[in-house]
View (cartoon, helix red, strand yellow):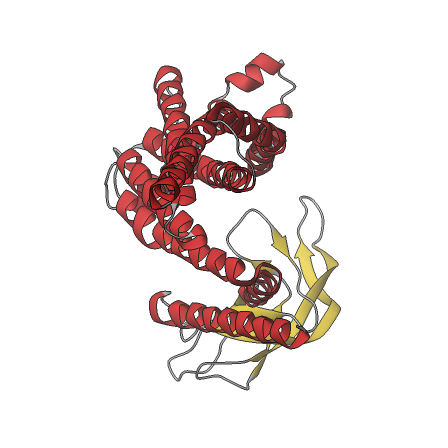
Length: 393
């Protein structure tokens, strides 16, 4: 028994390893790797509190010299034509955002190098970011291995489904939206396709999967309907002025459909939770139907009871996820000390509220939809099997 368990674990680890390799290959082949263009460096020494003289002139007085503290770091170049060279740079990370930070010894950084006409490094080079993606890749590998070990075959299937979802969003949905296609139509198409593929991969081609697909599509459709009506009635865009200007600049489309983009975000946000609850209910009803002889009404009640237990936590998950994503905006608007109704009336806050509520309403409707269709499908299948057994006798 122990040997067979070990063999299974080896199979799962092997499967996970294959997925990791495929992920790495996919990244380098289709991810547009910039490693050859980006100059990586490693901070090998910090030089702190270097005195710099600064002359300050005052009216009706002589110039006064002050001393300022300035920090430097020695950075060893790790790639490119200057690989192995060590350069002295200001210890200041400027990644063109609203914040600047310092590096410390051992950090891997991205460096912008200025060269003279002879190809030598000259003044003007600077650190523009800290390397973070390698740490994230390591976490992805740990995540994949843990899912493979704990979830076994189902875990590996879920990773495949997650990879398909990521590919569909990053390589199909976003490029189509940026190319000018209607975000609403693209989101509906992607959500239906992703949900069907994921459920088929995870649970296989059977009645349980079919019931879960019906429940998922129904719940997402209701969430989309609520979102569409709300966005149209309230004239929501869900973005700040700066974000709108950035999207217009990137897409080169002054008539970009911001409301459609908001709709797509609501649909994608609701999909995961709805798919989870529909599969849980369909699976539970299927197990009950196989173990006990129950009427269709009793199966529906059982499915509803399972759904009620999941509903509270899942609704909280949706609301907390959207609230967490909008934390900066909520703090920014709350700082004006406005009444609650005025805060809620702001476009970006109202959009987050609609995201949470539309997703939660869709999730609530998913429970009876999945319970009814699951009970009907499984009971009909069981009755058909019993009739065949009687005919055979």
